[in-house]
Length: 327
Ligand code: NAD
Ligand code: UDP
Image 1 (cartoon, rainbow, N blue to C red):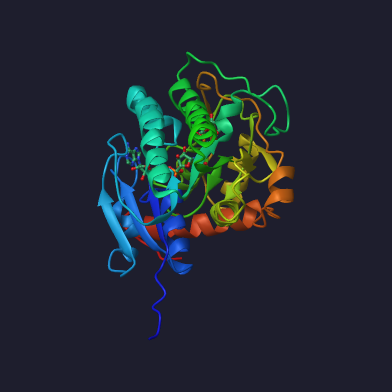
Image 2 (cartoon, helix red, strand yellow):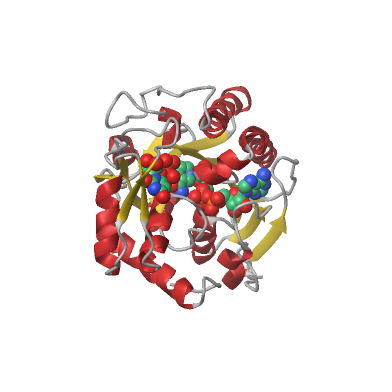
């Protein structure tokens, strides 16, 4: 009798979001059955509309603060959490609860399934860093009581829970610290710098630089991040991370504004607004560990990545910001 090969099953919590929807695409392409768990807090069904009728894709509207149980999983990805400062500060208690309870529930799920769990942590665990670039060995400089703390400390306790599950129960955890990532399917109202500037430039509106614009970030294109995720989940059990995933090309926010104005041919002008509290002054990943362990490095440069993202937003713009795309 011929044996029918069963597809491995991956669960993506936060799968209807920007990063999550790209991850679902990749998993489907790689032959997985995908369960996408999302309560659509910041995500959108538009991001996964093209997957809805796929026989190996299931969407479940679920809040990760409530436990979820399903057998037969090979992989759990925990991405469920608002990620943009505007959204995570809107209801800070919600963010802290999602970061803690969501991670706890997804770890429980991975423990019961005895499968790998990838935790989407963040460069925000370094806070306003005093070490530059930031290696994984740096413990960070986080304000525990500020307006960013619900997210920063939420993600830090998320890492703690992962490592405690690993030590106490042998759960196969993989922590990745994601640095600023951008690309198609960022929400128009997401509030993060790349989407804000592109949308403003396409509308010829003022580009809102916060502070003097001399603060730096290192921008990673979405496809590089997804490649890092997939390499990370394939590592042996002893590799728990944390591992930084980010592009080391560092730019000031002002430079980013100028680049986007040039690439869009916009008539926008730059205006300077108040710098939000605790906004990190600089950020750049040390990615030696990812390079060594995952044999990974980012390959998409800023101009190419921005051009693809601008193309996406232009299409949305033409459709009056209705659903667009498949790139
Ligand atoms: P996003 O807001 O587009 O995606 C987050 C998703 O989680 C959304 O679909 C949202 O609806 C869902 N969600 C939120 N709360 C939930 C809850 N309680 N239950 C179920 N679903 C919930 O943001 P993103 O940029 O795609 O970020 C995804 C993950 O990556 C987040 O955990 C974020 O912290 C992490 N991360 C992102 C970046 C980045 O630059 N994009 C950087 C560092 C870390
Ligand atoms: N920023 C800005 N204008 C905007 C949105 C953000 O100047 O319209 C700045 C923000 O103050 C920060 C940087 O851009 O210094 C990156 O902000 P984002 O919210 O994208 O990510 P994070 O601060 O979490 O790195």
